[in-house]
Image (cartoon, rainbow, N blue to C red; front, side, top):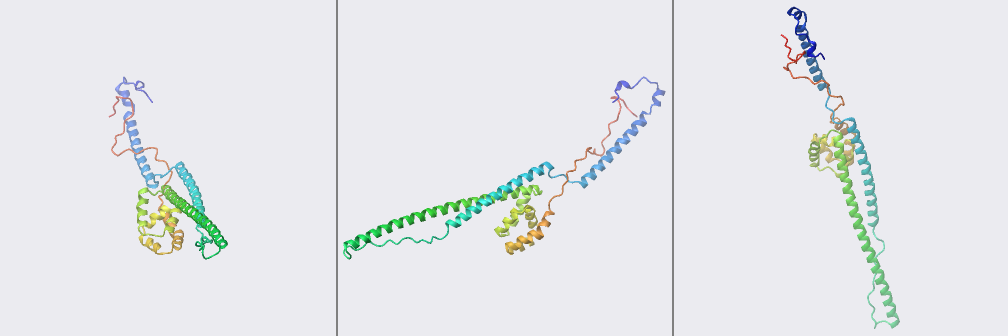
Length: 278
């Protein structure tokens, strides 16, 4: 950049008139104003054709990895829940063996001494077998209660994990938390089958499906009246593609390098400090 010392302020008036200072500055100012206008128009066009990105490529990758881990964890929890369910079914199977019958005490005056002793011994063995049976039944009931509690707890953990994955998936699909909550409240009021709720929670576009259903009450009411399997088929074949269209469009295009200046801003003149141009 030319420093003020490079300018010769001792020139004669004639020499100063020969220098096209005013013309050059006028042209430069016009060029700057034109650049500002073009920059403003370019920025306006850019804003009109590009939405602000929801996630960067790195953020999207992190979200995808997080969802993948949650999905794997969910499948593991579901397998554990299924194993507990099968164990519970096994311990809940009806016991084929009946409780041993304990005979009453024999009448010592009605039978001989030898027969009396035989009946007393038989009764004592029956008492031992009955006590063992009662203890086995008590242990079985305790085992059933424990497994049932573990299964219920595991099912609750699975449900919590599904809801968390569902909420995490909503972020990647561009559905805000308050939107998802409002949509879920509307869908929940219709009382659709729990199996259908589970289906929506696990679907990769579940949050968008919920949002779409909340915006189409008539369709939601129709699904409520269907068999859950039939409703799931309708969601998979007809609703899911329409719900996917609700996903916000975004682009990774960078912001304009030059920011447009507000109209009416005076362009700063070129030249040394203190110099005036008329």
